[in-house]
Length: 214
Ligand code: NYM
Image (tube, rainbow, N blue to C red):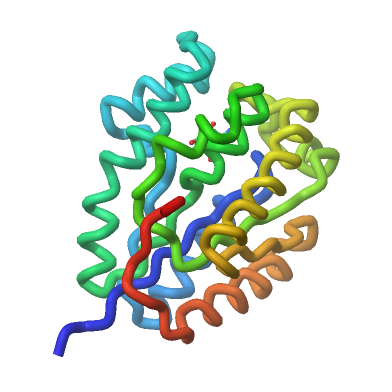
């Protein structure tokens, strides 16, 4: 009998929402539970496309808004085969950001929503999206805010509004895969909420892998 496929769980959130800390804790917890897990960070700054993105985010280079949007998407496409391969082999894949950030950040800059969605069409569809919300005031007060492009309260406020539109679109196209979690509590409190959402996904009978926006 074939092993059941792994779950694909995506984390999204504003900058400084505590997302990376929560993802790391979750991966440790799943491993301690005996599960095969792989963490995939987006942007993946280790590839040649990822290095162009890194340079853009650190404001060492400038790019047209559409060009950088397409690079973020290309960065997901170059990792898509590895994600599918791992899922097929029963590995749980946790992504720290995915195409939903792509839409929210680019749409916040004024690009049309339909343009933002298009290049990701057909990517592996997550079984669950965990969106950590935090008031931009709280995020702004957290450490290291403001080091990269987009890390201002004004931009984060607009990104947050766009994330709400993304959540509606996900609901419309893909049903109930989006879980919003208030991340303004302590790391432990937020982790318990994350764990509840993740275990409900892992314990459900998830279907064969779908395709994003299709
Ligand atoms: N970002 C991330 C985008 O603008 N588009 C995308 O498609 C993705 C995946 O990059 N401010 C933005 C969101 C973040 C920044 O993320 C890098 P992180 O998690 O700080 O490395």
